[in-house]
Image 1 (cartoon, rainbow, N blue to C red):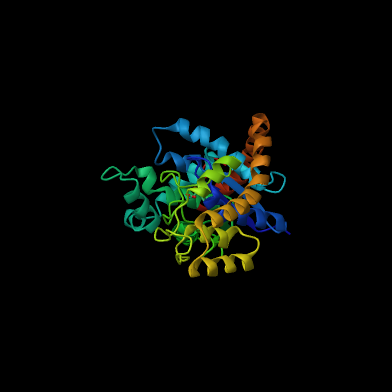
Image 2 (image 1 turned 90 degrees about the horizontal axis):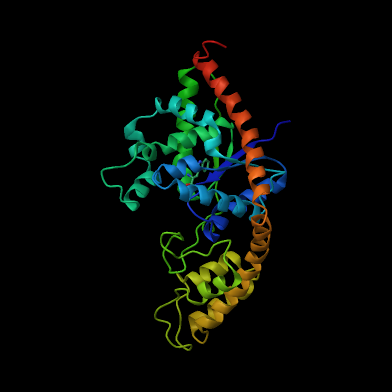
Length: 338
Ligand code: TRP
């Protein structure tokens, strides 16, 4: 019996942070460890280049950092195939083929891409590669015939786009070669972690993130200077729990939720200082991140081993993607000399 295939990945534009962890890394490790799936985890360097074409060095360096982050959180190369997108030529060919099945207007309607275009202030000069990355993402997913795609909520439009391409392709070429994927999202309300500054999103560009690679010292400094309720000036003042990122983090990471409930009550009532809850949050986060950081440091000392893992994974992924490309060409009747 073949197992359902998982495909997911990240753009290597920097080290991964605890937002990535709760948004999708944790899910991937859980799914991997059930033993019920055949997981492929991709470092999407080609997709990262769609808005970093002039800075390949950043992508190159981040690629290694992301690989370390994966291994650190427990993605196990014996159970999951970790590979590098740019090393799989078939993905580019599939992208070209799919592009003819998608309209420009459809791409311009993608809410995640729309939002990113605003954020990145491309203005009038949106790269063609950026606008079309959802098509390339459909190639990533379909090349492996993945049915399960563990991602953050912002990736739903990519899955919808992929399903549309699968249906168009199979209909146009009277085939069932391509398979429709389903997203696998974090439980409602748990997938998104606000920034240290209270911003809705944790991100490198906002400089409000805790990284999986942060030292114990860095974590403590970041936690102690977190945004809380600005009107909670004196310890005895009643404080605002809702929208207070310290409590949001505790909701997600604290092992003792009964204790968190008590702290919230005390905070709202007055008499609980910010320093005290931050100290508790610091303890909680240190306990979660310490084993991750230790494993990360071990792998970082052996870059040759990490490279070998990526190379072996890419070789295996390449075979699978080539096989699908072959089936796609056959379905279209463009395998002229086979
Ligand atoms: N777009 C994803 C992100 O920004 C990364 C990605 C590329 C991906 N290809 C994928 C995710 C295929 C899932 C499946 O995080």
